[in-house]
Every structure is written in structure tokens, then in C-alpha cells.
Amino acid sequence: MSEGAVKKEEKPRKFQAIRGTRDLLPPETALWSRVEQTAHEVFATFGYGEIRPPIFEATELFARGVGGDTDIVSKEMYTFVDRSEKLEPDPSIGSMNVFFQKVRELFKSGEIPTDEQDEAALKIAEDQWKKVDDLLEGGLKSESAGTEIYKLVLFYDALRLGTRVSLRPEATASVCRAYIEHNMQQLPQPVKLYYMGPMFRRERPQKGRYRQFYQIGAEILGGPDAPAIDAELIEMLMTFFDKCGLQGTELSINSIGHAADNCRRDYVAKLKAKLEKVKDKLGADSQRRIETNPLRVLDSKLEHEQPIIATLPRIADNLCDDCKTHYAAVKHELELRGVIYRENWRLVRGLDYYMRTTFEITAQGLGSQNAVCGGGRYDGLVELLGGPPTKGIGFAIGEDRLILSLQESGKAPVAQGRDVYIAWMGENARATAVRAAKTLRNA
Ligand code: HAM
Image 1 (tube, rainbow, N blue to C red):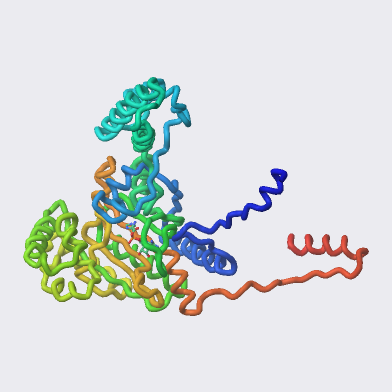
Image 2 (tube, rainbow, N blue to C red; image 1 turned 180 degrees about the horizontal axis):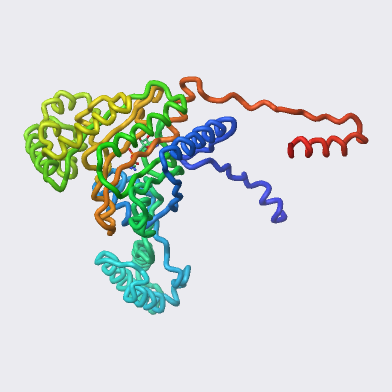
């Protein structure tokens, strides 16, 4: 049988989009474009400029920015090692000694970032190589040769030979990184930026929840933390939703206090003490969160935890005077702008960087994943990422959910019709038809 014949008999593999990702197709993409165009227009009227940060960044940026204990960073990031270009792509067994020597040099010069764990991993891999090298000399006759080689492969795989990078799970940390990197604190403050594009989180896919999803977000960096800034940002958001025709929107707001004045720390201590007392009645997730992030217990949707949560201390009763005044002024500024809100003392958000104002917006037709937007103030974040003390506030809209809600309420466009159809009768007319199409398109 010829090689060609063998190939023909093999069943060609059918490729499908990876779980949690999907193709966006016409006519639906017309709705996506319309929504994005509306964002460009509305945000421009509020004085925002567009930023397009990269899709992947150093893992450390998200670990520090979003928080190492958050679900996003601890379980959901797509992380890989961007291997140093200076290393051979595939060290053959004969050149392992040279390879390890090279790795040591790159570790030493700092060209491959390292920590204690990496040093230890390198040592284990080198020791294992020595064992395998001895076995090779003996002609691999030992019974354990297979196991030892297998171990070498495992240890080699665990070696980090480059920078650890992650697909962005969100863009706030990237925008702050860019603000610092491009010295935007030198510009007139505050700097108002918006972005749109894909984000990546390894979550369990379901309606309105994807592993590659799209956000439209905005951030205000620098300047004062005047309550009017919080309110105007939210006003812009509601104006945008209104222009998109989004139905049944509900805005919830809260203030989660201020780390610097300790009102949040005192509250978290109080909350934790109370949670310890009812620990046995809570589910496994909440029990874990008592240690890692007690505020997140307030997020729980578990039915049997609701009566317990209702008895927990509330942050509003524990805010310091500054935070109380700020929160009251934000509410007043929202009223001034005719923005309707609901207060929700349990709105704490799942990312570590928030302080004071937090908010979320839900829309209709989305089932359990009904948050179409989330945001809040994050005054310490730029500093945490190595920049100067800088105020910050922003939001991100889940574009997939926004589109879904518009579709559910009948706002999706129907398939586009044609403006003109040209038919030619007979080959003689064809050239004229082609030219006519060109003329019409140009017009
Ligand atoms: P977030 O609440 O994690 O906040 O995400 C914002 C919105 O993105 C959510 O309300 C939801 O609509 C959408 N979203 C999140 N995960 C998924 C998913 N797996 N599938 C579909 N949609 C999803 C942030 O990302 C912050 N960076 C927002 C922010 C900006 N805060 C201040 N500035």
C-alpha cells in the first residue's frame, strides 16, 4: 500500500473550539460591534481614551494585584513558562551536563528569574541526572533504570526555565502597570482610560460563564478620591447600558471601608470572630474563607448559610468617619445625577484590591450568572505594584452577558439584508456588471 493510501484511510481528526471558548459569528457579531461602538462613543463624551494592553503579562502582576488567595489567581489562571531563548529547545540526553551548566549560568545572571523553589528544583533535576548518567554507564542494566529515567523527565518538566506568564484574567492590574510604566502620573490627573477585549479564567463553563470571555472596562487613575468621581463613573456606566437598550438593570452599591484607617481591618477581625463561632454550620468553602478571606463569606449563595449570614456584623456599622462621609457623599452624588441604586451590605467583590466604594449591576435574562458589571475603588493598587500613591476606581462589564441579555430581550439584529443585487444576462454583460458593482461600492 502506498503512503498516500495509508493517509487516506486514517480518519482525519475533527477540531472543535476548546471547552469554555466559542466562535462569535454573524449576524451576532453585528450586535457585538454595535455595543462596542456605543462604548467608544459614550466613553469619549466622558473624556476617556482607549488603552490596549497585552493579553499576557507576568504572573506576578496578577498575583500581587488581584491577590494570591483569590479564586482567580489560585485556581483560574492560564499560566505557562515563557522559556528563555538562550536555552536549547530540546536538550539531548548526551548534552545534559552542558544544559544544566547553562541553566545555572542563566539563574546566576538573573536572565531566568528564580526563587528558592526554582533553586531546589534545579538541584533535584541535576541529582537525578547524575543517577541516570551512572545507570547509562552501566548499560542501563539495573531494574530501576526505567523508573529513574521517568523521574528525570518529571523533574526536568518541573524546572522553570523562563518567566512565568499568565493570560490576563482581568485588565485592571495591566492598566495600573501601564500607568506606572509610561509615567502617566506626569500627565494632567486624573487619567481616564477604557479597554475592551478577551479575558481568560478557568471557570466551570455554563450559561454566561466562559473561559475566554470579553470585558469592556474603564479605570480612573490619579487625582483626588472625590465622591463625584465615583458617581460620575457609575453615571457613565448606566448611560452606556441605557444607550445599548439593556433591560432590567439593577445597580447595587456598598462601601467596604478603608484599609489605611483600619476600619476594614477592625471589621474583618469582628467578622472573623463571629464566623469562628458558627463555623460548624457553614459549608466547606465558607469554612476555608474564614482563614483566607472572611469578607467573601458574605458572597455565599448557599441556601442554608443565608440565615447565618443575616446575623453577621455589618460593615456599614463599622466604617470610620472618613469612610462614612465618603459613602454618604457618593450616594448624594448619584442622586444628583438621577442614578437609581440599591444598597447591599453583602457586596464585597472577589478581588483583593477594593476599598470603599464597590458596585455591581445585574440585568435580566441571565439566570444565575446575572452580574453584568462589577467595579469599585482601589486607591492602594498602583502603589502595591511599585508606583506612587495613586487613587483609582473602575469597572468591567461582561460583554458576553450584556449581549446575552440584549438577545433575551429581543434586541438582537436580524440577518442583514442586501442593498443591491446585480445580475448579468449573458456573458457580454458580465464586464459591465463587475464595473457597476465597483462603482456602487465606491459610492
Ligand atoms: P469581575 O467582577 O471579576 O471584575 O468581572 C467583571 C465582569 O466580568 C463580571 O461582572 C461578569 O459580567 C464578567 N465576567 C467575569 N468572569 C466571567 C466569565 N468567566 N465569563 C463571562 N463573564 C465573566 C473585574 O474583572 C475587575 N477588573 C473590574 C474592575 C475594573 N474593578 C475596577 N476596575
